[in-house]
Image (cartoon, rainbow, N blue to C red; front, side, top):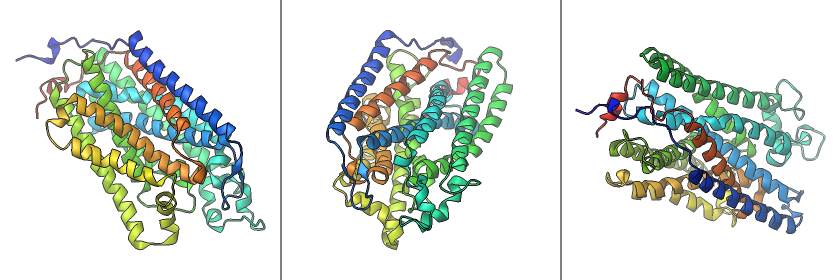
Length: 428
């Protein structure tokens, strides 16, 4: 019987000029669309953002909202790569050994994401988060907000509410700091295992993976509250942390699947067979249904309770001419499409189906974050136009370049992983 050792386990991904050219083209196209979108928005001039806001709207607010959408979205895909890597060790999984380097490569975006998130917040916090305005905490001000004042310590403690949101910034720095620490720890252990071999690295990686997963369980939910839920400061949902995680997870799984198929098409990952691809397809299929379950559970509970402070979140989206249609785009791309296309066993093994579905899912879950962020930041001044599509392409190209360029630095297969043989003989 053939063994995994019969393959070239030192094979590296050659990040060729042709592949880079495609990424640069997409990034350049995105930059062009973004520029055209900015010019079009700027030429549209200033106009009132509605009676409720009472402030003049400027095109830069839309730019900042798009920065925030993509910052949060691609941060999620990056940390999901590390999360899925850690899951394999914590679950003592063997089937996925040949795919581990793809998962962990996504984490290389995290340091860049940290800088972008912090910079965007310091530059644009007043345009993104209503709770950053000091007047809403001043009881003598006509715009004083009792509800936000009651939540103020969550952002500002121990400072005075309405001053510097030190507690919020501290959490962001803490989350990124630990995520980057765990990513580097797990990555370095995997690379050291290539050099020294033995089973000790597997046990050590499993231990660190378990610690990371505990931290991630808390930090992923709290970051969802901080970075997305706090945009709609009056609203709350006990399911929101799960909801954001589910959206991140499906998008991350789709990205892992696309990179795997891309490498297979390029002649790499000889050990990876249709059974591995099938498993990735099953993950995408299953967690698309999981995301839909969370979406529907959140919606249904709020719908039949019909409490004004809860239902307003969906009303301002469903009843909006700007956002209403995208609710249905969201459901079709993220549930109906993967459910119908990936239902059969053969479809999960068909590269063309998986490429199509995973690409649309990645766009679909970006739409999901678009619906989470824009209504609360821009009101009816938002929309999905050239600025949004351009920013998505720029971020997507940058993320792909960072992940693939780092993937090319080390061998694609963890050659001394103790479960490598199991992965090679994986069959379902």
